[in-house]
Length: 239
Ligand code: TYD
Image 1 (cartoon, helix red, strand yellow):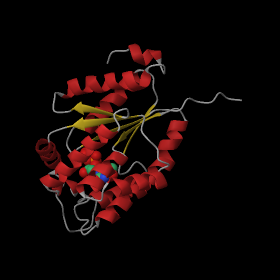
Image 2 (cartoon, rainbow, N blue to C red):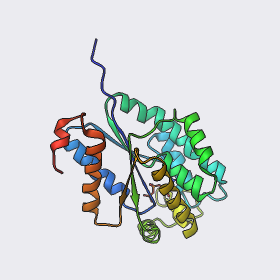
Image 3 (tube, protein in one colour):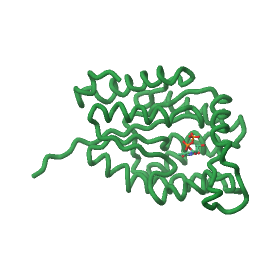
């Protein structure tokens, strides 16, 4: 009989729009790969063909009148598919899954920002996502004004339009960036509350510093919290 594979690790990265998390995720993936770890990078909302379609609806600024509960349901529709189709099979196969956003985003944005509260988010996570918990969550703590301004600048090129998406005029991803400062303050406060509630899982990093410094801290946290006793080659290696 073939030997049973060791389950992969599940790492998520969280933070406000424009906090630099996607770059940090890529850099962490590169370090792990260089150490011989099999890594899958994925994102939410999205990560599957169906999930990417749901993402387009959720993020396009032409999606108007979406109620907070409908938004919550769509986030979990995409996530349930992602967990079953991609995340759980990869982990079972010994692959480390690095996911740009997960259920903490829903708790922060829909629970906090949209004021639906944490309870329905955690209940839906149990019901639809097998209550899957990341082995480690990296929370990028950033300045609300600066992060959102950066995300808006980044998306400025994708001009919103009332016409249906075409190749020439694709979906934009600006719907959340148009929210108010108060909305993002609620998101940030909820993230901090999650970190306080679950200090073992959530590693909060001050993301206002130089990306290289933030990267080193993230790599150190991953090694310290996940790699010890797992792969000695990864422990000793410098990035
Ligand atoms: P993302 O692509 O990570 O955008 P950014 O790079 O700007 O951070 O996420 C898209 C948006 O979706 C972001 O504004 C946060 C929002 N979102 C939620 O509101 N709830 C969720 O559960 C998820 C996964 C994302």
